[in-house]
Length: 212
Length: 240
Image 1 (cartoon, rainbow over the protein chains, first blue to last red):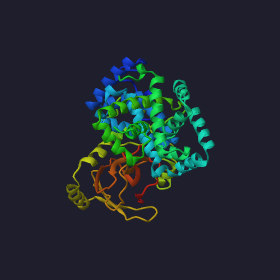
Image 2 (cartoon, rainbow over the protein chains, first blue to last red):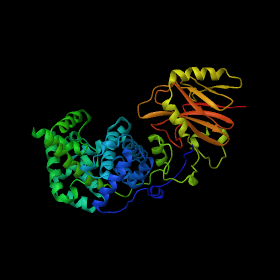
Image 3 (cartoon, rainbow over the protein chains, first blue to last red):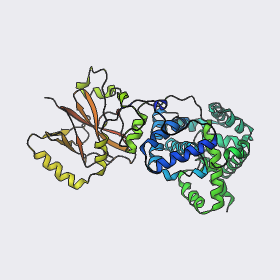
């Protein structure tokens, strides 16, 4: 068997009904796709990739800033959902969100791994240089956020909540590193992250965040 | 439930916990309903935040889907058109090792999924006997793949007249779990992936159709690649 095709996401034809923007249809499509993944229907994986590949890759690239590492993570995310589709719980959110968060988690692991140590050290030096550097890093992170809705929500938070969340989530730092960089106790950083997330839940709206 | 654990759950939802703290929090989340519920709520916020990553990113490689299909062990490449089955040439780095490729403008690379699947499902002890018997068959080609840098032991391979081959990768150093050795054959002006050898290879069967001009092993990401960007770790070229 020969498998040799070059294709961007959009050239893969749809297998399942898709592209409806509403949460309700997204949820039912997720269910059909997930069921097909559970039954190991191979077209389900290509459909998942066609639908969510760009988002997963974008998330990985957003954390890693290196195309080859982002591709590795994207590959891993789709192989994992193929091998263990039961990890996704449709009652807890969308398949898109699940895959993107999986990509985020794996990207953070890669970022912190030996492989990315060199890049990491440079970033950490920048982060540790001074509190001003941390603030400018936050500004840089905020500039990278393309979604106005997310940026607005983050900007509504108090700075002491926003900064730990921005540095942890969008830069992939552990809370310990964030604490070090901001010269704060570790417990304080964690509690600010929690408080900020609770505020974001209110700001972003319960109807959006409700389980599918 | 301690305040500290609540805070850790929030940090975990953002993947901000160091590895050494994750097990504790995951166990707590699994057994404490309230923590579980709080974690789910934080995860939903995180799933919204993840939408904030910039849309402006370079396009991923067009071969990424192939890699995924290969790594997932798909038996077909569903939803994809065989008519598009043209892949760019191997990287220029490989041409140093395969003079036969020099001057070839575009090389079609075929990935033999069947060989990859077979590799993962065959019992090594039985394979050793079959490989040994194949080496003694009349007309079998017994070759040694050498490390271009000269730092590793040779890798022995045999290819019978019918095109069935075996390669003994046991002399290769063990790779991390997320890496694999991949076997390539040069047939005419094509470089063909003929097997995924795993990270701790022993005997790997493969099949070659056509006039074999060389064999090479590269180190790749788990699941293998369609086009290698790595220098081969071992090479044999038919000098005849």
